[in-house]
Length: 339
Image 1 (cartoon, rainbow, N blue to C red):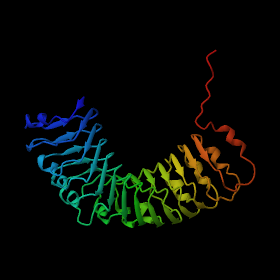
Image 2: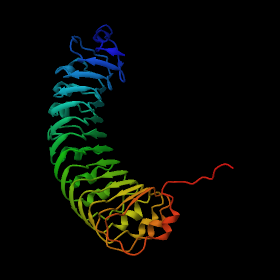
Image 3: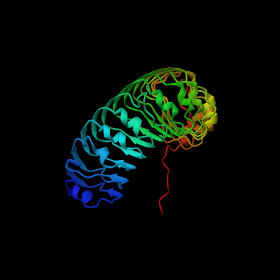
Image 4: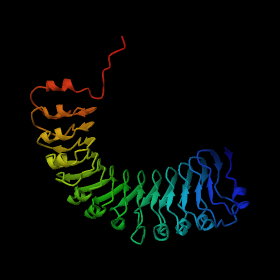
């Protein structure tokens, strides 16, 4: 469908509860002429269209009982309306993939106390969020990636014990990874990559027994990798592009036995590939290039039958290339043709 947003649809049907116009080709400004409050509307989804301009400053006042708002994948610009902070019962707000700029209004963090899913990815937002006055204790998913947020990671997140998915990647966050992150016991996905974080990886990360995906790559982290023994569910670990030193802890390899991808490239690791890596029967990606290893060519990797990608380049391994590598198909399964 094309054309401008059908204001008449809302104003002629004041008892509407759900409006979904997603995945169309609507253009023009959004809610530019609305005059009526819709007390019954709970779901408004106009995602993946071609709306332009600014979202009206008083939008949040027109839908006092809205629970689900999705404005993502349009061409909105300007500030996020402060009035969205009046959506007290909203469970999900998605403003991602637009061109919003400025800081996130404090009122959103204060007033949207029912929020469990907040998506602000792929905009030009700055400042630090959530602020010290925020009350977003029910968050389960928070995506702030691809913005210009800065400062230290907000301590307000330390109270989000139900947080499962936290993506702060591709911003300008600084200082150390806070130790309180170890208290987010429900966390399954943690992505802090491509920021300006420094210092060592806190040992408290080892407390995240539900963690499935960990990405701390492309920061300024140093020190050694913590010897975690409780990351039973970890499948993906990315630490590339830091200044991490020391050995690869055998404890992680012995307890995170379901690992599928390891990327430690471009660090200052030593000691070579631990023999305990043989226990990772599901490992598909092993990237250890440019890690300053000085050891004999590792034969233990020959036990990784599911391996599809391996990078050991730019190290100082000695000896011969293990002949047993001939037994690894690297994802290529030969099938005899039908004769």
